[in-house]
Image (cartoon, rainbow, N blue to C red):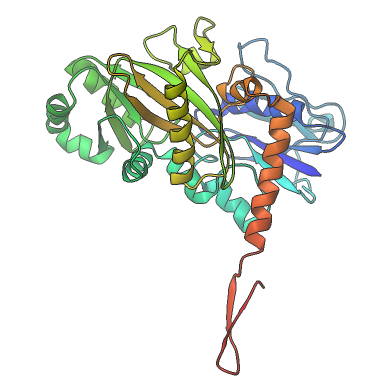
Length: 384
């Protein structure tokens, strides 16, 4: 089976995608799968690697990688902070794209905008190729935290009180919005781009000055901004796997070294701790796992997702924070770690995800897609 692994992209999570792709390609059983690396540069250019591409660590930047040609074929030479640099034999650039060949399934590992919000999934739907993870709708809802919270609220899932404002409205009504936040939410609160990941552009505001600075920062990353009440809470994560009958993993707890679990804490600092399994009561763990599965269904997800929760230290109330539809697969990422602790090793996990993608695609192919009125007056439905 030929598996295309798509990674990179134009989002701020470009580097994280590279590390995830490396781990996935290494985990795929080479006896069963032919891996086809497909990189997307920071400029949006798609580049085909060969099956012997490797992703060794980049010694210049902790946690990042370079994509290097294994010595056969024409493909990407290095993928680093500056983007994807193309090198062919003799140092010349290709005049026309290399043929991709037939792919049996795609494993998207593009984090953030331009790959996780439904655009890439839409392309794969049009191409009629099975792919791992959420479909167009689930991906779009999973990326837009504001719309995600609307779905959660309507599904009866507990969420933290918040407010949403668009960048254009912020330009004309900043003071009025800040006053409304101060009255309705109070300080401290978190300010974040509605569409984003890895906590990029997220700030904690403890007063008006920090609030204004946080709004300006978030507005640089998205046209829609969420302001959320900050609660003194434990951060609990749950991995979900499946299609129509999702299964939840054991739970993990994040002990951030910083004030909150930001980009640096996730991928650079070594001081943050991950507790697996999370020290919870049986009732708390059962409740969170149930909420994770309900959130998965509410967003119409399939394949995989990581659900993040808050557990209020004072009241012990549980809130769902968000769901990530293409979670990280780096060596320190919670998603594979939680499944490892649940008895599903990394290679078996990626194998299961590929099979779930093929199953979902087969189910779609079985649906009736055309309507033809019969000559005798009866309706005729076909799958053509």
